[in-house]
Image (cartoon, one colour):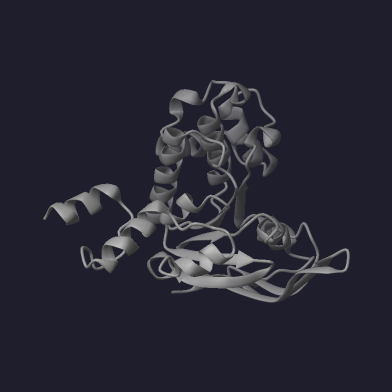
Length: 269
C-alpha cells in the first residue's frame, strides 16, 4: 500500500522547548488513522505543521510531493481539515452557497458547481439542508456542512481536529458512519486527531503520542492490548477494548471485538 503522508525528522520548538525532536510518521493511502494523546502532546501543532501554518525543520511528503514554500498552495488542495467549531469558517447564508464558495474561487463553471454540490449533498444525505442557514443548524449538521464544503474539492486526505467531541451521541455516530463510508467507498485517507479514546475504535490504525513522541503505533487490535501503556499516561482504553481483554483473559473470546452486537453474538453462540 502506497504512503500518502511521510514526516521525516520533524523538529519543532516553542519558547526553546522542543514539541517535536526528530519525529517520524508514515500513513498509508486509503487508511483511517486515529492519533490520540493527552492535552499538550503535540496533536494540534502537528496539523499546523502539515498544513504549513507553522514552520519546522523536517521533510514532509504529501501524496508523493515534498512540501515546500513554493508548492504549499498545491499541497493544501490535497488536504481538508474539519475543526471543532466549523461555524467559525462559514461565510455564506445558505448551505448551498457555503459548499459552492471554494469552487467559485476556483472560477469553476456555474453548472459544474451546482452539479458537484448536489452530488456531495446526496452522498452525505444533506440535500434537505441546502437552502438552510448553516449558522442555524445543530452541531452535527454543521459538521456535515463543513465536511461537504471540503468534499466538493475532492481532497486526498481528510483531517479531523477534535471535530466531533462536542456533538451529542447520535449525531456523532452518524458522522462517524459517514466518514467510514467516505473512507471505504471514496478511498479518502482519514486522520482523526482527538483526545476522545472512544473515537479510536473506528478506522484501522491508532497512534498514541505523548510529549511529541510516538508511544504506540499499529492496528487498533494490537495497540489496545497495551492497556498498561495507556494507563501510564492517564488514558483509559475504549470500553469495548477493555471488555475484550477481560473476556480474552477468561478465554471467552479470542480477539478484540469493537462492536457490541458482534460481541453479543459471539458470546451467545
